[in-house]
Image (tube, rainbow, N blue to C red; front, side, top):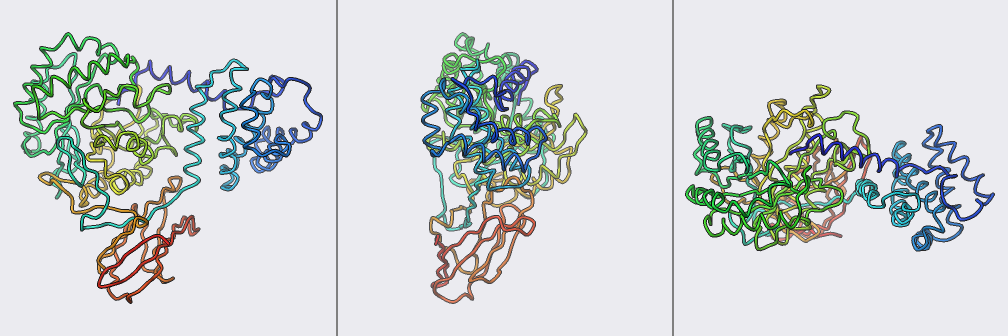
Length: 584
């Protein structure tokens, strides 16, 4: 993770634009192509007065009334299409209607009115294209509104949650992702940390991977790697040959200025490749990590050429090296993860820096807009990030978290974030294995790097409780400790149709109500309570060998503070000592 002051200045400029474009433009300043109808004011004025006095209930009530008035009897879909086709002629209507929906959603959330929050968010998204088309009429940049679209899309996802029941299987019939790439376990996830750190030293499941950082411009590959491996052996008594993965992060200190220099350094890169080959270690070479978020941006063609140049040398000189293209969990707003992708022939693994943070850059006054853009606070959802990455690359390459963690301590206000961090650690280490068999490794950045920009700590020295939970999480059977090559566990959604031994029915629930840290998931069979869990992933193992043969109904109830958020229903069929589960 590398964020400089130069980058934060650019971020501040972007946020200024986003916040301007997220609030209502004065009515008098909106192009409306003629006089405003007199019937508008009696509907608009109560809404505007409610905004002025920050009366959320009134904003919701009068905002919906104003929205309906602007549609004039037409459907929202018809008006959105009509206005998008002629933004210059309908700018006034577009702005008023879009902002009415946006404000209804915002204020409905403040008063826990879920129905109107969903309605307002859906309507704002429906009119987003028309609003973007209107923005140039007042001198704005429509691309900047993509941040607002991100906010609304994320909000809608959190409001329209779909829980999923999973089965934990031991017969290999669950979902499995296999790849023709080096060092990929068929099932299970390798895990590790940077050299010189070990959160789980002495534990029953010691780390199977280790990470080393090398600055391309200033450090010699042989010296840096040799030193770090020896230090790790001295500190922890672990032979380098016991690791299933050794990640080497070949960072570009000068970021975007470096790729153009790579082709002139063939001899140096070849020397590094020959050294790596001699180690005989299973190496993931992460070249130019987080390129999509560099302050000094790289030219895409130059970066791709540099990556391919290095890959060709490694393919020739170091067959024990797998090439990694690794991105950041929030790229610059005008590029995406494909911008710098070198291509399938040159990439073996896909990595991501995934930091789950309470505040943006450790600022306790992080605004809702900042939180949405940079995926912090209520938007700090590691599952959503991994879903996007898996959907983009998971059919081509194994995926892994090349560095990351959950913020455990905030330096700027001396805030212990343990209570906030623990459920998010469970989301990261319990949900991701269950949901994404494409994810094959996770590296926690268990290192404190002092910074005058990033006022956060992710190392376990700040929280013994977080260290204890981490040790517990990576000691589950799906995580591959030192010497392990495959997990006996696979997972499958119950809706796929699964069969388990009746005496060991292991159920888990993906309940993505990330606005709530305390949920209870209850399991009922034929209306009879069979057990519950309040710990992600809400695992329950049932002995149903005494259940009568035939059909039964399994219900799963998800509750928060005693209120039911969602229920799931499945058909269970008992026969010959087995239980078959499918969606009703």
